[in-house]
Image (cartoon, rainbow, N blue to C red):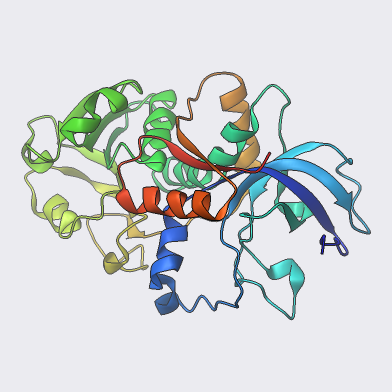
Length: 312
């Protein structure tokens, strides 16, 4: 049956949903070690865009038919039977009940696909660059895994902030990554980034590659980092979650993004003003085979841009 929004909730008719690596982690069962309890049947998907279909009691910020986007995420768990407002995921569906506090308004001139692609990756990239890395004019940054969606957005945000940006990618991805104007591209399949003569005095490192011993290479290398530099990995939990555990870094930890409609709105404004590019790799139809093909594409890790599920 069609869902009915409760107090403070909005029913969204979803037009586009986006796939993320976190969907794969759930599929593999990796998140069980983090005590993410799962209820079945389970509907995956966190990023979405669509139109408001119905409003629950107490919601006045949005109108029926208004175009919206967001990330159905939070500090709770999936499909919480005791607190519907604490439930997360469920975006690979025709309709989604979401708390109004998770929604942002989508400008009409921005296509639904770009809005769906922006949420998780855009929020994570913004938090890493600005909240953790404190990147500004003259900062020296290294983005490991620059062809990932978070990596590509982080490159652009760091450049907008006035930083010098180096990144790693495969030889295959060189032309794709070069469109986003990093100052230096190193091919990880042919060269060792930590031996490159321009990799020194780094102020911030974002790890989207997850290669073991990255942190050790940075700490032990000759003048690779400045004292007080920041390091964050979104893909390697082995480094731990204590930000003070790896001196001479002032901050170094495994990080999971925190939802923020304020950042969603900021990233959308940059996109609307054409200061930011969000590449789309492929669209999949909302069918059993379409969802399977989306997960297969996520598994292949060869996508150059975002993978979307279209429901419109």
